[in-house]
Length: 168
Image 1 (spheres, rainbow, N blue to C red):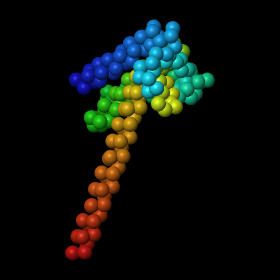
Image 2: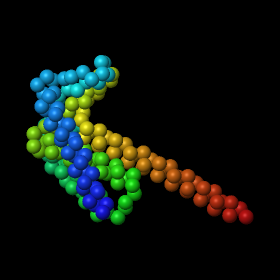
Image 3: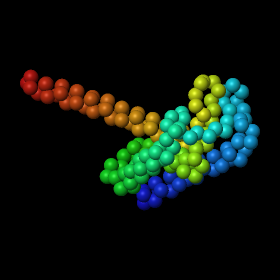
């Protein structure tokens, strides 16, 4: 059942990403940009041939192959892996969905459609798929740090207990 839910959730998130990009191409490409909140946020049509922040733009094919392999490995892990912690699972679904959404763009269009442009800070134009990847990665990082701190506290308290036992 979890496997079906995983595939369904990824399909919904990727479909939503592709639908938003479809509207960005239809409505933003002709006009270039559209202000949403004055000096805070605008929607701007950008064709990104690279990865995050336009990096590796000269290696689109290699980037697509590497991304495809990484996504396939992640997908297999989510569906058939033994470890099923909810936080890791949610983060994995978000990362895979975002990665797949951008991979579809790279393969079908030759570039990724970006459209969210923050104006209050100098930053790259990005899209919904990028948000999924970044939030998923952030959740995973916080979970890992929390786990490390928890393990260190347990080791410390176990060490103190062993020292107290040795003193008796």
